[in-house]
Amino acid sequence: MRRRLVLALAATLLVQTACFGKFHATTALWRFNRDVGGKWVQELVFLGLSFIPVYGLFLLGDAFIFNTIEFWTGHNPIAGNVPEIGEERIVELPDGSPLKLVRESEDGIRVEHEGVVRHFVRTADGFEAWDDEGNLLAAVHGQVNGDVVVTDATGSFRSYTAEELALAGNSTVSVAAWASEQARQNAASMAAR
Image 1 (cartoon, rainbow, N blue to C red):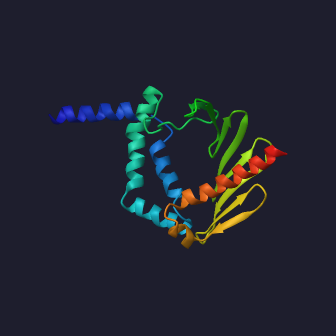
Image 2: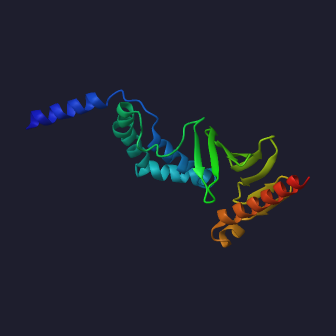
């Protein structure tokens, strides 16, 4: 019995060694950690996830399970639907029109719909939306103190305090709705010219 266990363990280790992959699970955990709060909150979350040891478990899962599957099949099950850089996808909208999405970089995506092209780029502290000519349409940037500043294409901005965001409940929807409305109004005024 013991000999079979040792042989099975040795065979497993031989099959699963040198299976280098993209470490999608560990990367997803790191991205989650990166996207929480400011640097102090990120550090506290990191220490907590390291102490529990979530980072260690994710790394082991990548090294011995997910990267092995990726090595032998060419697809990592943790990768999900995240497209590779340069990959494009077509989504049919409810009205039947196609929406083309192209991942331009690690932090950027191009969206095309009915001849209109927009670029959305994640920044270190938020995101920005650009037209195809390189004009800024809207930007959302978080501040160190927890405030969020939303800027439209005309340079007009609105600052939301952390307290206002907390009172808004679903703050990202409120900020995104304002930015979207500003971008829509700006696009309408540009089209009218």
